[in-house]
Length: 100
Image 1 (cartoon, rainbow, N blue to C red):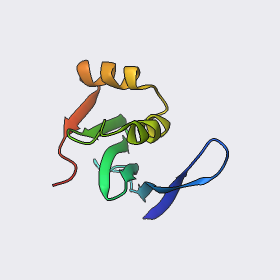
Image 2 (cartoon, one colour):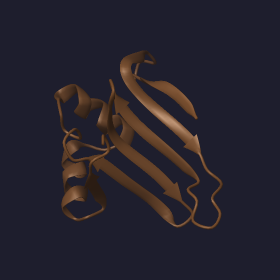
Image 3 (cartoon, rainbow, N blue to C red):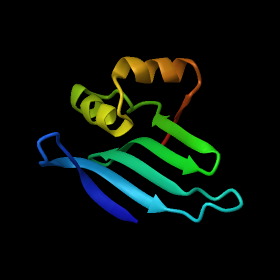
């Protein structure tokens, strides 16, 4: 497992905004790679790469918590809030409780 601060477009490390990376084995249903975006102590999104595609989960309560969270969520997902909402609405992204 590897934990890194999110890096700004200018190359600066952003305090309290983290990407946690786990490597899997990729065989028989095991994930290949999982990246978790965490803001302070709250998990915002999880991106899991499987052999047959990528699955994105967003926390039901925290995915759009603040403008700052949104800014770094957009960087993590490499898209705009509008695109994220479209993917939630069409079922591409799953809303779930990631902070049980």
